[in-house]
Figure 1: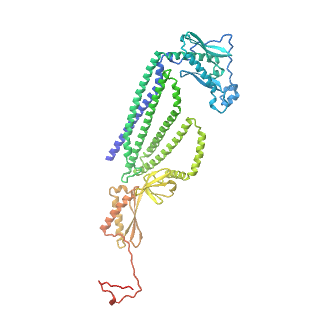
Figure 2: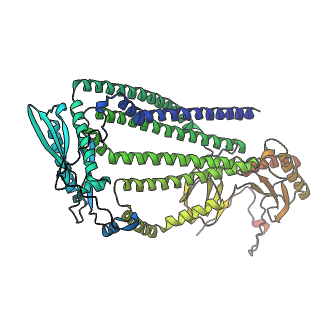
Figure 3: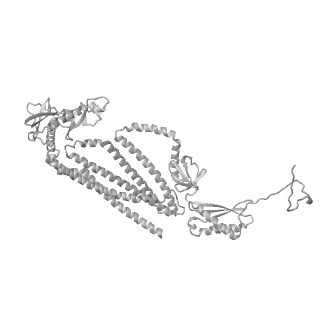
Length: 636
């Protein structure tokens, strides 16, 4: 009854923990969703809401289009591909069927904000990929230097105007402004046919869009350096920092709660007895199965805590990185740091993200394997002994599968990480295949160990907790893997046996065991009475506690096995639970000795007859030495 109450309380605690776990997961998902929304969606949206309209990006079309004069030639229409049906072809075939030259593109920026994309012909045809974009980069640097010169001149915003002039049938953007009492007319760029092809429009429309974009960018450049605007941005930055600090404190509190839960589970994980390595023979099968399930639940809870702690750390990093990134973009003097920051964390960020992703996948795979084997163990039709055996076998399978799953995921994660940083995976895999082939030829014993280990697991030859005999060694199986099996013998020695050397194995504790007793009685004893006493002692032992739970069937008295000079040897079989045959045999011998003493049945002892034969003539009686006298002999 006490065990049932404890099991009931354990089930109630388990259900209560599951309910609390769902509530924690729901709160965690809501908190992380709110944090990510504020970091990537809500905060930028509020920034665009609180920032004045003059700060925002002006869309193309804000400047009235300037129509070409009658003296200016009509722009030449953009040539199209000569291949019919507008099919999408590979670049090599596209160049063959089209008169479109190969080109590169790059963005023109002002104050760290990209304005538009320009195109230029590729001037490199060699094997150096870094030289392909020299022409477009030179064009971008030239345009940006002109923009910066115009912006830093301190022009009057009321006199700023971007006009379009036509030269050689191409529109040219000209910036008119007045600064320091002087009027400036700066040529900014020429809109080319490649630019129009890149944006899939005509040169005149593209020139009007770029003129509006350039004028809005120059006005914004001057407006963002006004004291009123800077004070407003400081308030926005303070609000962002405050919100980030509040969310960080919430995440920190959550981390503290997770640490407390992990510290509470740590002593239980270190002090709980493990039936897989030191099986207590006095422990009932139901208790062993319960211990296995409790350990499995404890491991799953620790895995969930590890994943939650990782999410909390990642949330902290993303939160503060997003806050710093947004604050840097609020001020024109620090906006140039945004692309630099993105370039600095590009490769480390990818590697850390991939590592975190595959760490979570490893934890989830371990939890999934444990959960699957837990469901397989919950079969009500199994007996307690079979349930214990199944639980031990499933635990061995689960440990092996978890190791294989973690190894495969680690390998895939390494490949994905290398490919993300630009490493060519195909030559690496080919080299790894060659190296693997060489290693496989050199490590044939290891391969045989793994293959034989898989067969042992699939055929269920033995499992963790069984007592086996392999060759000349025997002991309790403490660890079982794909490469080796470790046994603990009666002297406490740990014996490691490679799986490839296991050809014939004797499992002494699979499903049930047997006591095989050879009892020798004296030749002078009453044999029928001895047989009756041996059978009676076995029957009485099977009917009393606790031996009635250990003996599975009626003891079988096979009869007289053989006769010799020692006595009559009687054989008895007793079927017991796995690993209980030694306890039953010791107790039965004790009871049988007491019964033999009561009935006067002697144990057989070795008997030997000695015959003396001599050819020497015996001495007459008068020459014999009298008793009690010593006769001295003088030797020559």
